[in-house]
Length: 616
Image (tube, rainbow, N blue to C red; front, side, top):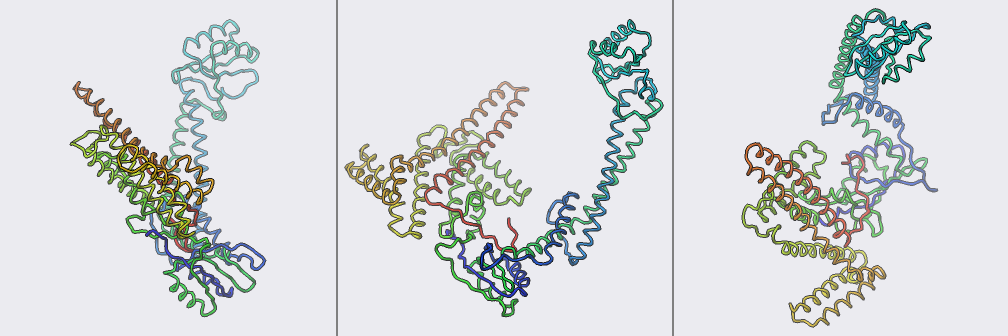
């Protein structure tokens, strides 16, 4: 539980003619963590199997089809009885059909886009009785089309133009809270007319889509609407055809993608092996409990041509880590995936996180209503997102513990519903002493774990100097404080001796770093950091009380104000729960990563990733 699975180093060698057979068996066994070979003078890296290129090309096409058809992997697989050539043929045929559909989609979408542009321009012109031929280009005739603010502006323009010339025609109609005008004038006075328009706030509109149309606007508009409807119908048929292809080939594509991914993984595996002209060499790690079964199966398929050498992990080996935790604590491995894996010889902190993270979270959130609400929400989210089940299992347990602490604090959505064991709002100093005591216990557990880690790596005295020295320091400070406040009848000199002894031990164990940490009294800073358990919880309680008091004032007014009060309760407590969940999660995480892990954890090991196994 506190240590990972025992691992054994394995070297597998044999002639190249059985390489593919060995790779298949290793893929089926799913136990070998491969150590990638780097090219050197003795051996090159291996070459992928002959079919790797074909597999890669087919897999790219399958994944492109899955993306194009918007297929979601929801576990809908089928039993695939086809070989690679049949899969490749089916994929080729499907790709042609899908690509043809995509081209048709593009053509239809382009036509719809053009029709929409024509319709937009015709909609502007539909209240002006002007033949569309008039909007063609003429040398002797200048045309102005655009918007002015209102009909008065159109009249103003008409009046000023009358002073310039009688050779003009002005049409106008209201469009979208503005006034559209179409003006045709002699091209000789074009510049003067432009000045008149600008003075009256004219905003030009350029018609580009209707240049080839003839006849009146209403007939063209009706024709375009009919054509657009036909195009939309055609597009819907194409969409339904794509949907039909999705339903027909969904299982095939997902299964083929999984199958070819596995085959490609096997085909490219030699790139991680050492290789000579005639032989291969595979280095890796296998859990010791699976070792002999794996060797037997490899010898069987290798028919006596494979040689396997194995030995237990040595002290300086970089061993991949496979954590070993009970089922109830396993979801908390999520925090190590997020942070770093412990080294092979280190104590795995997962079980400690399982014990303490929900407690810290529960103390901060600590409300029956908030705990039950978050528990239900996380349970529903877990069902919706099964891939994140470990994360939600952690939060479900933490929410349950929050409910228990809510019973301890007698809080229900900020209301104190009975006499609490400890009242967070009223017994602040008592709560502070409790959380500091928890902090001291947590930090010292970290020191004890660190003591064990150093003892295993460097021996008893190194562990005493590096970790026990801090416990001696704590005893010294505690003795001095208790004797000063007359709580114990011990001379302060005893505390001073403990301090001096811890100072010498730290210098011996950690040198200058120990001196700096002694002067800064970092361990007490770590313990004080646990005051956040009380502070975050108290802020949540105070905000809940403010929300309840504000809502109560509206309830007393009666009538419509009752609805406002209910809204305040719902919105206020929703925001407070969200803030409480975020704060409780992040600060619980910080207390583990910073205050706890700093006492023993080094990490940086690789996670055990067996060849052939699906990585989560």
